[in-house]
Image 1 (cartoon, one colour):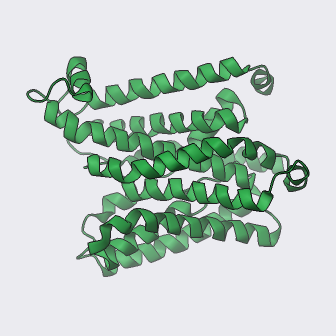
Image 2: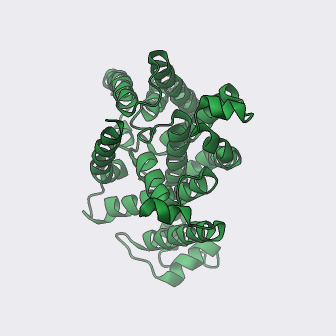
Image 3: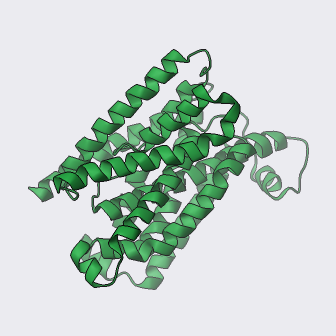
Length: 340
């Protein structure tokens, strides 16, 4: 019944769902800006966003703490969600996502290495995270390709977990050896938006814009990947070129997200699958919808992380893991049943 419902969705209805997701993102973001140890009124929020109010009340809290934090969260959520869509499409594997197949771990290792070995070159964290994510992505792809099981859910998941465990072990070793230098990285490795200012927004924004625009542009090609390499090649798709481009874009998005907020998991898995349930598998619509849902999911999770146990603040990565782990097990069980 669900598949039949997807087939009858017109272009207008799909666009309407995307518009509704955008409205939901605005609503959740404004709601989150107003919530905290000091609640803010709607007029204060609008005044801080538009710049009509420059002093008094909660203006400085909103303008310098909450708004940049929420904007960073939106961009990180979008990046992780679209990275997941791209990896799932190019690997033809519904379980592929940045944290599950080790992409986040590669980016995290590169970022921690810069923090520990080159603390004076902190501006290199984002490019280094991109390179780390790219190398991890390529490693997983070639491990799967070498065995001829690129579409096997269990194979890619197990290979990704093994690579992720190795990279995380190296990362933890570097952190322990350099504990005197890396005194603030524990929450970062769990994934956190705490303390993110406008400098974090400025750091991730260029990478997000470039990656998201390219992802939307190449989204029609992902539809051809689902047909298989032979059919896609017969339709004129340059498989090798687009595979490399898509993996690079996915790595750019995941790497910049990790550099900005640490290793947050499961957003790249949950958002794309919810998007497919809502709109189907046409990547021309799935990519922008997943981006919006990723923003909603991360902002919502961060709001829970900083308000539920006040005055204690949890890392947002803990909340996404609590939400995502059961979702992952459910999907894995369903995918394994289909393969059997």
